[in-house]
Image (cartoon, rainbow, N blue to C red; front, side, top):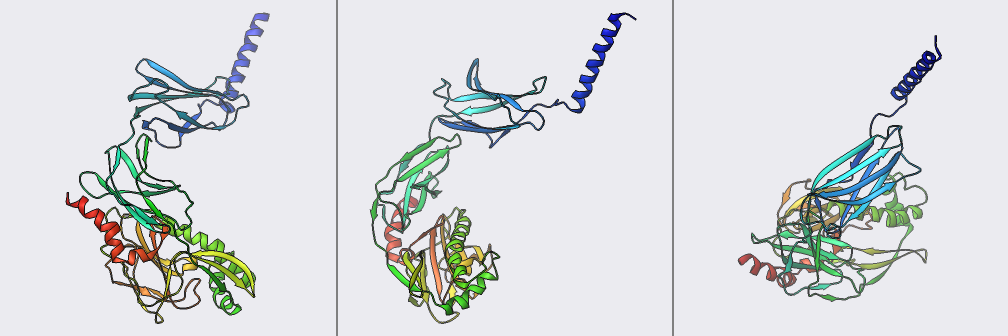
Length: 436
């Protein structure tokens, strides 16, 4: 046999071994391109988030571009010398800066891995470039708000708005349509501890992420809240802490240590849960007139700044975000206004509690109940019995803890109990808009 024959045989053998290695160990699949959310629109400043994954080979390069007609603009050309099986990408796309126009376009993403044949993935996604922000204008006039209080704003917004409402610092309060012509109502709250000054803006955002923000006339009325000293006794600790130890595995040890965790950690957990319950609201206003206040003498007030003492030494500080009302033991508790039961269960420091959604972001919370007379999802009318007062949760004696919330932010219930406040701050604004 000739040397040429042996050479060809060896060459074929090498190719066969390479083919076997490719089948067994190789990577014939391209990387996967996964979007963090569906992209249908590109606004003025569009954040594009996606990841590229490859289980076998490392990712070496990613390219991103936009094509509109015959015009293709490169956005990013990323190389990864050290590779990696996953690359998380975030890019800020500015169509106007790139010279693109509003209308249809194609987003193009390609990615290659490190395998011998450089497997490539290519995704082409049809998008709409929309750089025109939504239009928004104020309709209501007077916007006086107390620290810890509530306020209503009426405004109109263009139909392309995906969401709109009021921004108070970092808090967003959603608006809801109240008339066929596009008038919206947004109830918002000014937290008891709002910074001074604080930015309050009317905003709207469309599907492309374009945002319009405008200021509007408003007057913030500052006020001071009470400072209250509270003594924690061994009798109270012995009476109440077993209730929490029985429900929470991480609450173990001495009663005082349990109490400090309950008053801090568990209080925050409960408030987070309540905020989550109040994150979605019925789009229509369900309530009418002033909210009912249970008969009885007031005890703790909204935003009381409490300092707690044990055996003469300071052990904690917290803020009381409701009004406590004392009446006869197991006194009937009525629904403060029309609405839908969105929570009827035990919730930590608040004990047995009922939360009613009154529509358009307005909620009421009745706590420390000895019994609950309603179920989740049912509708109630103002005055319906929802439970009885009690001592469940972090309550030293039989009473009702009552709170009002606007989109999950605790506000002063006294405003919502006051017919004059309702008339001046809400009814007087809504009637002209709804009569047009």
